[in-house]
Image (tube, rainbow, N blue to C red; front, side, top):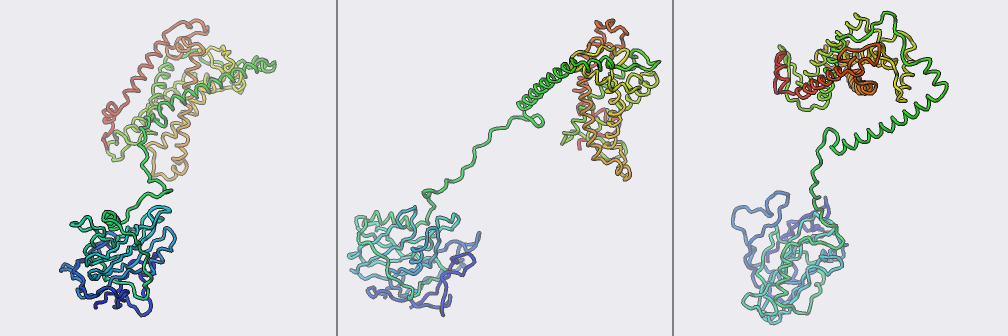
Length: 569
């Protein structure tokens, strides 16, 4: 009689030894004689030829196990005498007593024999963990009373694994049922005919040692019908499928597709911009109302009234100070406004530009900058030239006396003028002759502090700065220039807004005649109804708007090619 070896499978625990554990003198490759557990069966019948069945791979992505060597598969020895005996191993006992969620694997016990005619065959099915909570053990117990059955060959294979409910990634175990399918030609038979034996494809077929044989599992005396036997057999022979258990969390579903976000204009959407602007306007109105009420309350005090009488808001000009606004100053004013608007626009473009439309490089140099930076620096250069001409003419004609403080009383006069503006009781001075203290300080800061600081910081960040000069880089680092350049631009924007607002609030026609038409008189009412300055101002706005929309790569590129090379990369 042939005695197969013990097959050792995967370990019970991670990092453990292969199962079953070999103890004593038993070697994983030693022949272990099988013990006949029943003497009522005839052990002389040969085992039919069976093919080798391949199972799951040993490693992920590997071949099915055991591998085929290309030659004909060897059949089991036909002379093997293996009696049929329903056995319940210690492993089955451990599996039954194990807590829910534990995974147990047992080596299959395969038995085959020829049953003599007239012998009663009773087959016990090994039952594992229930499919659902508080349910019956699975698969359902099936037994048949085969007292009048014809001789048949039975093959039983114990389940390999009981899948744990707490381990979602455990590999499914293949189960071969011991329940026979009904014979096709005899559907009315109460006991189905046992199927032909199918060999489970192990590397070495093994059986549990006789010493581990326990009492047979309990059998059911109630016979079953052929339909029930077929249904049970089909359920057992399939790999166990994962089913929904009570209390289990539902499978995660993909979240619904998010709706398209609204288009953003800069950092905010259109609705957010409208809300922000409305909030700012309301806040400014409330603040202005508070300031007006506070200023009028202060002017009701006797001490404040005496202060305003002492310092009416403007200082006396030095002797020889010119009167009026010359024509060159009006042109300078227009050029300064034109260049300043385009400089602010191009500067903001440089800050938020991520992918330039075109690049510019000077002639004879491979160093490239974006076309927007070139345009910004070109405007800066023109503004610098215009400013130098303005300063030269300012001191040449004596107009500097009107915007440069010449006495310390300019500060209390500026405070008095501020109170009058805040109370909406405008100062009465004539800009054709003299500026009040607040205007004088604002013009002085703009021309002699803000403008030079803007030029210096812009030059430090420009491409003409000598970057290889370590001494200059240490004395004036680029980080400091960036921190100063943008706040200076904010100051210019605030100055323009307040300046234009006061021009229109304190006599628009008269002030526009002074600034653009160079017309005025010591008597403020002379040119109060003249519209010439207003229409010149409107024409200048049209020119500025046209330049704003024309400042595009399609227009700038031909101009930039006159001074260097323009490329798309």
